[in-house]
Length: 173
Image (cartoon, rainbow, N blue to C red; front, side, top):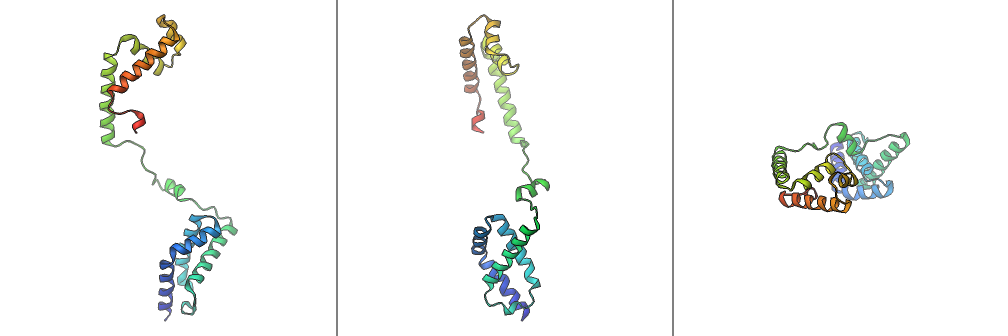
């Protein structure tokens, strides 16, 4: 009969899991802690001395899970979040681009290089100096004998020229 009572308790936990978790989350103020406490309660059901004597399985499981969560809080247990555990285990998504992305980026780079070759020389020099070398617009104006406003305009034209030739821009990603 003990196995029947244990099976009944487990079935009750599984059947009422969502409701139990909502109630625990509301009381504890922590959804993840509520889920962890319910999982631990499921495991601790094996240790119930007389499972067949439990008359209100849902209430019994709720109290058990609540006490487990209270034990966590009393012990000052520094529990890891799922994100922290995933990071420790190396389960974070790989940020490195895949082969398709590498091929696409290489093609975009070749397209950009061709666009730069076809761009008017002064625009290209201003764009590369400003974006790659960090030269200020004031310095570029003095270097090319033009106004700062003209440097701004050349940069805008150069960027628009490149953007029009690329299959996508950074904002598309």
